[in-house]
Amino acid sequence: MIEWARAVGTLLGRYKVDEGPIIHKSATCEVRFATDIMEATDLKRVALKIFSSASQFERELKVRLRKKPASGEDIEPGSNRFSADHVVRLQRYHEESVLCFVMPRAERSLDHIIRSERIAGYELHLIRHYALCIARALHHVHGRGMIHGDLTPRNIIRVGSNLQLIDFDASTKIGDHVCTEKLSPAYTPPELAQVVLYADESTEGLVHELEEMEKDLIGVASSTLLSCCQAEIESVK
Image (cartoon, rainbow, N blue to C red; front, side, top):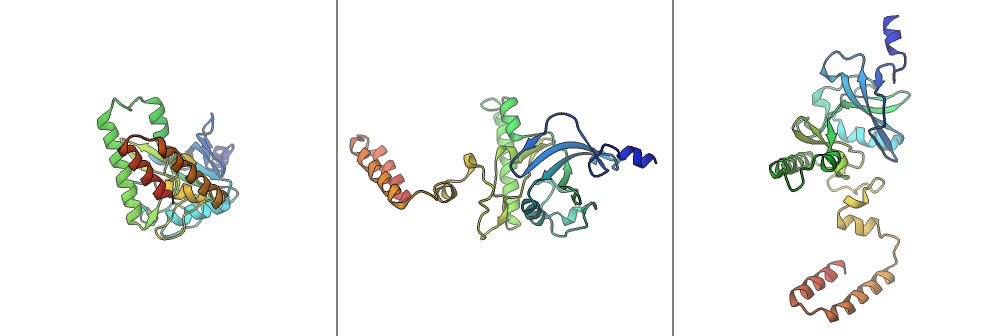
């Protein structure tokens, strides 16, 4: 009876979702903070990533885990593909009535840090530390034969004094085709943006734009600037 009473008003009979706004919402998922009422340790404060897309759920689950336990079971640290030093680990997943991941709750995202903590131009030692954290995390992921696929400030979070990666539903194996279903246009690398974001433009239209750009170079007086512009045009060709 006590267990039943505790579970009333919870998600999946286990997670008491915090009041307040959703932490993050996208086209494929939303993230909420919650308390795990069945956990007595520091791990009771969790983040729930709730998926609206079954394909994205399965994709990220496959990327994150070496060995898949049953739904709702605790995941052994060794079953996570990535080290908890660089990637926020998966504690468990659920695919009963709701598709969701359960992860340790982090403090805030790099996006939030940039917008609210005024470190840009001031805390140079902290900027260097964060840059190293991101570089080491990416090196670790690449060492596991994967690419992240959607690296943005929202997908980098602070745990303690370090930064770690989250959100692997756009990740793929190195050498495979990249995932184009889930992109953040502002952070898409140029070589991918050229293919994905401008895929509908005709070849004739692009040729015309290049010809117009070459005409504009006639009025450039600086030889250095002219060389740079010509090199850029050649790279597009």
